[in-house]
Image 1: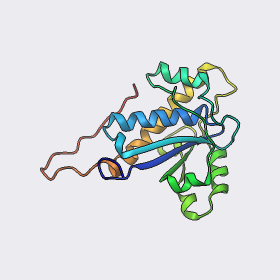
Image 2: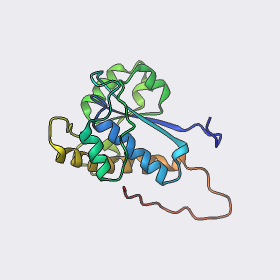
Image 3: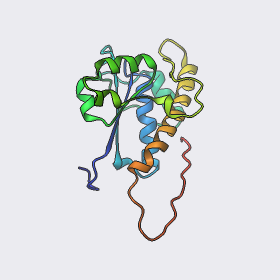
Image 4: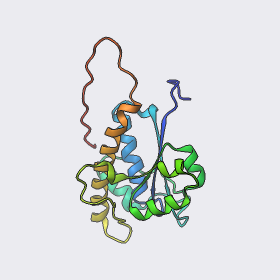
Length: 183
């Protein structure tokens, strides 16, 4: 339980090595939750399908791209997704369809499989469901990927926000629509 007495909604973002895309998604999603004053209602993390980078910081190009957009990615340490992540999370967000296939293969139950979603599937009209892997590309690709992740994370947060926002007081206060622009 949190200080507010409500268990937070748990989200894990998953990519290949957990040093590029999924750390970006975690940091950006966390920013949206904090900006909406709902940081205590959401718990997010990230993981990789592979174990190549366990314990490492995010790729320096990831940290640099995040920094240029006003985010801090320096605290990230890579880890591998485990079966326990299904039990500990309400939503498992894959960054591309290859991660989605791997995660569905690892799901032991239908309940586990039902938690899996693609980040870009939350964005209506997305040009693609796959966030491309920038690892073998230059810094410009990291910046492009971050813009995609911001868009997908914004759409995901907008969808989750009504479920995680505390009930409004019964004083007739109107609910205001929020517009979140990344930093």
